[in-house]
Image (cartoon, rainbow, N blue to C red):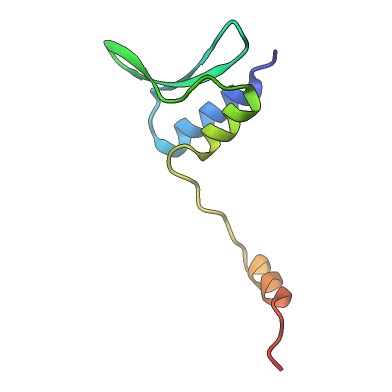
Length: 86
C-alpha cells in the first residue's frame, strides 16, 4: 500500500501548525493513526485507527486551517454569480 498521500498530509499538518512532533503510525493491517511525539514521554495517539482515505481527511481537517486565498478575479466572478436586485 502506498503511503505517500498520508505522509504528505502529515507534512502539511506540520507546516500549518508549526509543530514538528506530529507523525503517523502504520499498523500491519494497513490502517493509520495520528500521534504526537512528546520527547522522552511516550507518544500520544490523537486518532483512532483509520483507512488511508479516512486518515487523510482527518489530518487535513485537524489543527489550524490555512485561509483560502481569494484573488480580485475570484471576487469579481462571485459578484457576477449573485442574482441582481432589479
